[in-house]
Image (cartoon, rainbow, N blue to C red; front, top):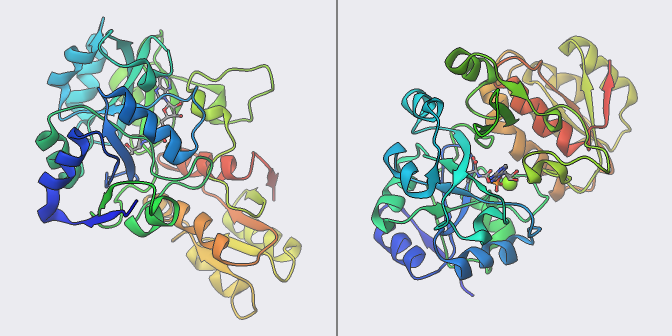
Length: 339
Ligand code: TXA
Ligand code: MG
């Protein structure tokens, strides 16, 4: 199929395609999503085909506001409305008990559903015009780094989807925070644009699912099924180097082979530049927001090179650093060395 390129004057076209059962790439503030009508089981099934996504990995529903929660969820705790008041529209997904009108294809048979109200103005306009909840995973081929530009998404999805709406580069750059509100205390399943500190300020105690910070063992089942898969991975193996930036930079300089790729903080570019080595900057060591915006582009960039290994500096886990670290660690299959 030919993938139509849409821009902001084509909102109605994007909405019509969704209502007709099509697949549309949509910008969100986190990453580009692969959208379909979340009430249409056949359309949702096509998402799994286009991505090569395992059938047991549920999708989240994108809605225009908290007033749609009651339509698709039941037993909604007060905490959900408090989080919506503080953080919606924005990069937060809440896992809630679902109603029977949510297709099994969306939830992969779970009795819960992830609900998100995105902030990107074009995304909101499309959902409102379509007037249906939009099921949308990140718009990458399953296992690859998530797309933060329309060009990234076309690398993976050109010819596999009906259209893509170009809304420019994503302002957050990592996927939404996922919090499970069906357990006590609430549990962070995936760190993202809303930080753990922000969730705790709103809710008090918040548990952190073990899949956030370490590799799951063969018999373990993380509460977010997607967290068990190798993810965000470039073709070459990645090693994450932790520790103070000066130490991790020096460690990488001492251990990287001449043709290996490096992901480093802006300040350390001169340490690696000059040779044939492909180097990607994560942004300044002190600017974790910029690191979040750049991390997927940095991981993707090496797939256009011949590197046989990639070394990456990473920030500490405060604030959105937890999300950046999580994405790098997952890309590395939790292959982490302490400098
Ligand atoms: O920022 C985002 O959330 C992006 C944009 C497009 O909105 N979407 C996104 O979707 O990242 P996806 O499918 O790539 O990741 C959703 C994650 C998966 O790890 C999935 O297993 C988990 O959410 N998930 C979905 N529904 C769930 C549920 N009912 N319970 C637990 N985890 C769930
Ligand atoms: Mg994804």
